Image (cartoon, rainbow over the protein chains, first blue to last red):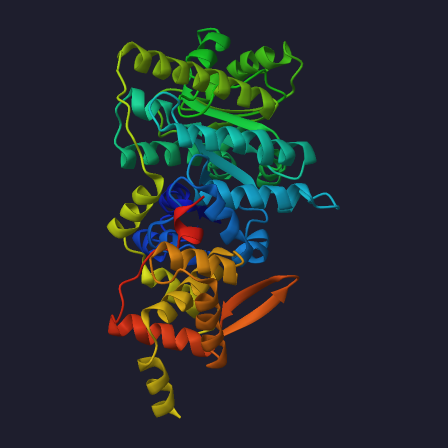
Length: 367
Length: 109
């Protein structure tokens, strides 16, 4: 089952499973916008959070985790969690969740490990708060969770292609879901089509996805006459962060013509040169006109390095912004400010929101 | 009893309303709110200039059981009671007073 946390996570989880999922949010309004057969409202004391979600503030998500923590910890066992890393709800709740998983004294058994799909912001297009939140998220909770070995695969999707390709959000979400489903369909195809060589059954697949590494998967038309290496590197999945050197590999080849079966040894040879013995399957898919391969590579890149990457690019853009603002040659005027009068003016201008206070009193049972 | 409660509420002045409101606001923000803070805030909105007056406002609300007082060493922190919450709700619903911000809770960082 899919679990979507926060606005972006909820949309993806719902899309990936036609609404057969659980979505989590701090705002009832946000929950009502997404189709899902199960909806979990995380309680926050912030009236703003209840109405409009956490915005870009993970503290609201972290505070709200307390109300659903136990339920969520049981719910994610063996399932898939979608979340963005830049926003407030997804980042906040998943940070707490990962911390709890990391702190478990007993190792999490393979069947109960969770596959996480995170959506990272585009560095030079999305606001700096999203980037800062992501740096914090990758540096601490993700890092600890990987170190603990208690998670399953982690897929790091990036919004980079969305902005570079000027793709509408709904279409981009569909691309992410289609790509993700191409990976998840590996064991289904293994069962569905005639087996020509190797075999990936559901047990093999579940074991593979329960390993605590980053997962880069891609699907492309495979030309059996050309070297595999160049085809693979030119067909890395643009929706995901590029992979490091693979540690473990799984691939499924779908052939329209059974006579091409021995060609799969080329792919095995390529990975064998890197000392990798992949889990693989070769099937006959008569619906295809060309051979197709789905490859999943597990790689272990320390989150700290990912954070450094994010930081260095983020710093570069910050420096550019400062440089530009200095180049504006703005002359600042001196203002005389009477702090007390200014404070009074601010108070008179903006009245307080009595609804927040009454709402709070109701929640704590005084009303 | 309801009649008495209504009469008590109708006798509350703007100063009492604000003490109740700020006490609830402080609780919502998880902050301690003591008589010194109340005095500073009342002085800020121009209601009183003496601490004795602030203390008497607080004591009258405590006598009505609208607020409670916790003594924490030499600080007397106040909190709103269930009766006080009902009184505050009633005053807000009637729109009797315009809400003013607390300098301690909302203006200063």
